[in-house]
Length: 448
Image (cartoon, rainbow, N blue to C red; front, side, top):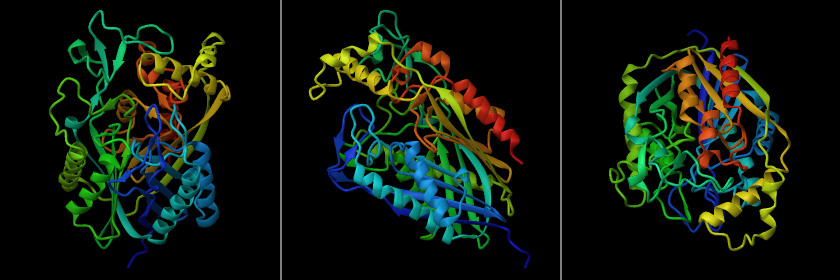
């Protein structure tokens, strides 16, 4: 038989945190009191001759760059994979362990230490599972489950900005003000893209999906769950009748301004806990399954990677904006209008400790005829749609929250409009979106 240069392997490691751990992703800290489903670090390793790349999708809200740099260093030390060839991302479920403090959410340091070795373990096992394989890029459209969550409101509606004290042009998630909505601000990215991987023996190895919806959040506070990302993974495995070695993965796309809290049609999904996330995850799996008959397999795809860290300035507060924190008791802050004003005042003080310039990682990985990009923040649908238009509609997708977390990165015109995603804080402090996406496009054109 001819030599098979291309090999692939996948594996997953249980990373479920203990009860009592911190859960972040909200304005305040929540504590885990129930585990609905297990969380995983899922790894897919690809190799062709001397080039080896690894994708890792982790069921967690966010992971900072310094943590992931340590993980990549371990992977290189023990398993010989170049850190520039490793893309590690968060699904962005808001019901997982916390390894980074955001807003008034706390960090679980023991869990952070444990998670580092568990991610490395998932890559180790995937690498050990390498075998002759083939790949294919595919796509479907899933417009039912994702909408822009930013709205233009009727004249007279006060979309208060807790940072400036003024009124924004845009309101994010206008709970209780549905009758004041004029229209959505932008179009969501409704594409469901994926990379399919099979062994040459026709046994499934993995599907790495990508969908640009934030998360579902149909669970009670205190719950540990992978959200719709987990339901997708289990249902695609069932649809494929795949063996135990199959690893289904769903990564988060450019969903910074998109979710399924549809304020124009609020009753179109079931309201019971977990029913909406299960319905969406199952339907996405079905759409992938149905589209598989249209894909074209590549049996010896070349691998190529471009990775670069670019200097991006940090938005910071003025001296006047730093004064309010001295008058606030943060033990008693609530998420009302006054509480948000004080919360964001605290954010200015903490953000002021950041360096004036940060290094933002950009990554593109070419696999045969397709390309996958990695961006380390919550980018808007506009960014993802622009990249797909300029790279490939069906054989390109962007994985966000990748290789670090740098908060929301809205287009400049969206920052001018305001809205939650633009309020300057430790989860929204960059304003170089057009430069970032142009640089990522440039990197794709350098790929062999």
